[in-house]
Length: 149
Image (tube, rainbow, N blue to C red; front, side, top):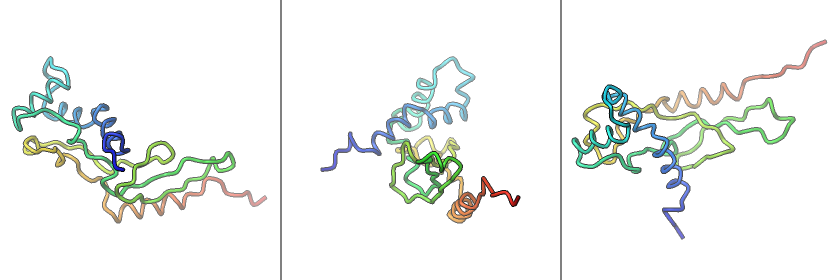
């Protein structure tokens, strides 16, 4: 049975919304720091002016909507100097045991402010080719090399 309020994607979106990366990017891009308003107040007023409602959880674009590099945390003490990297498929939520490269930079522009949900400020950092090259390079790093002596 699908239960959206208890789904992993819902919980991750809620955490990312509360962390405020999108809010901070909008606040910084449009001069919020030059006012005496809080980030929440400034961004909500700016968005209400352009699209008639403030920032919402649905405006947050999850990292799992795009391919990204994942690096597995070590599982045993003898593997502490080992990296296992992969390209993670879309819609896979990773929380604690896999660290991921952020697939998006947030670059808000004035023409984005009318959108609902607000997704255009999210710009991919890497092409698919760059992801696979970087993954291959990460998996090729030698941390220890046996001494020839």
